[in-house]
Image 1: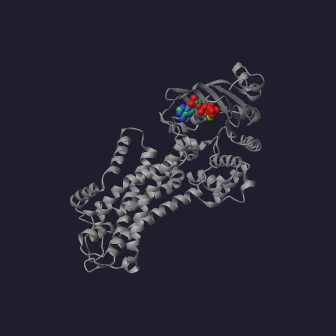
Image 2: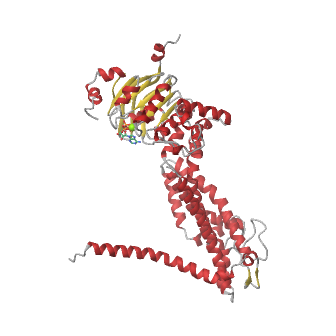
Image 3: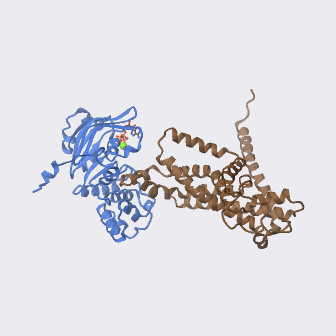
Length: 258
Length: 284
Ligand SMILES: Nc1ncnc2c1ncn2[C@@H]1O[C@H](COP(=O)(O)OP(=O)(O)OP(=O)(O)O)[C@@H](O)[C@H]1O
Ligand SMILES: [Mg+2]
């Protein structure tokens, strides 16, 4: 029998001695940790600590950058994502939500259907079902169900971000990377997005980069603190925020630097 | 040193800048006025749709007009696919290595080659070496090569204006590079590509030198039947009736010039409309 306890212990993503650099500039140094299945891992740290670099290494978006170099390994369910997986397959499994809402200049419907169409779903009835399901999961369905044909760029910022979440869900990822998804949003829109994330963790593994420590405290199960490319500490969120083991973690979450 | 009151220098600067801008308008205005004044009376349906008569001293310009339309279409067929595909390769696929640099320099140089040199090149390669003879095919190929640099450059510019985020979003959803270009990039670059292409075509339609040795005929009693036939063309026809045939009425010369200018103008207006429409629709 699979109990919730057992679920939590299964590592979904394993990072082994990962270092990342862009030319001479090192942005991650010898980082090792695991992300468990169906958890939300919060990643916090001051600017330029390597959080975005980490996420873009997970879905290999950095491969587009000729200066990018990495050493170490990243495993998804035990499989090396750089050695043993082709890019489309990997990126279908590991979705990403960017800091700024990035709808494509298409209708709401076509935005959500963009991913499934890439992967050869063409039947309208199938697409309609996927669109509705994804929008519901991102808590956007009720707000847009009557205007699916209108341009996605006409939605508000918070709606756009939930649209992007829905668009990721439509390709049925296993892991979702959030890169400061609420940095451009007001508190109410932020609450909507956080609510969506809480629901999602039942079925997805989530890595949430945020420069809002309070958000990490509210949403994540465990939290990792990065500083200048190093993983300083990773532990249960409650522990990080009450009894951090490292002085630097304590300084950061109490707002003494960063 | 004399110090001039900055208020006065400001006024002077404004006056000079404005005057220079005005000077740009003067030739455009004069050209249009002159050509309209003498050409408009000649313009009629009859003039557009009938053949030249009496050794081109009377009648219309139909074969020349049609020839130019054929040539523009031929140019499009040869330059658009190669231009767009090449531009996509250079902008999206080619690594920043020697080969790409070489091609880029080649394109810049191609853009700087005088049009008469294209004409001689077309004569040497298409007309003589490949034995196409003076024909619509040879002329279209020559004009197509001449248009390539503009089409490539404007396509690359258009690709460059598509936000990086569109590409990343598409890739992050598991798209391959080609799927990304095809679905997220090209549709948003298309208006820019079309604008550049139309401008290149309008230039090609008005050129004389490249068609002089490759396709243009002094006078033909019948229309071209295939791409291997010679054709008359407006710019060359204008040259002929202005300098080679004595005693052609001024109104016929100016009427021909007017048609040529209207043709080019119409193409440019289409390009402007496409761009304006897109700008209004664009939301990023
Ligand atoms: N594409 C890139 N090319 C070169 N250097 C980069 C690139 N992306 C990031 N870096 C460098 O890597 C380091 C880490 O950057 P990264 O964006 O990962 O930090 P971050 O923790 O996400 O910061 P922020 O909170 O500001 O988003 C920085 O010093 C940055 O300058
Ligand atoms: Mg970042």
